[in-house]
Length: 158
Image (cartoon, rainbow, N blue to C red; front, side, top):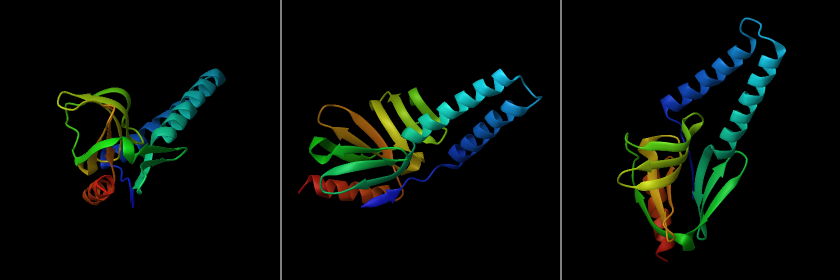
C-alpha cells in the first residue's frame, strides 16, 4: 500500500516564500560576488538537506514501512514495530532539529505527552504514530492515514 504525502497550505507558502526570499537576496541591490556565492551555497545546502528528509509518500508491505523521500528511502522493519495508531501532533510540540514547514515537517520534535519523536509529514491532520520496540517513535503522515494504519496493523498482527 502506498499513499502520497500532501503538504499543508502553510508548508507550501513557507517553502515558496523562503525560496523566493533567498533568491531575491542573492541579487537584490547588486551585492558583492562573495555575498552572492555565500547565499547561493547556503541556499543549495538548505535545499539538499530538505530534499534528503522531505517525505514524498509512505508505503508499507508485509515486511516494512517505507518513508519515500526525494534522495533516499527509509525502511522501518515491521518486526521492530510495537504499535501504530492515529495521532496528530499538538501545537505544543517543540522542534529540536528539523523543519517546521519548509518542504514539509521533518526532524526531531518533542511533546509533553508523546516524548521525543522523528517526524515525516506534510499536514498534521494526516498523522499517525509508529512506536518501535526499542522506544523510538516516528510521527508519519500521508493521504488516507486511517487506511494506512489499518493496513500496517493487519500486517503486524499476521
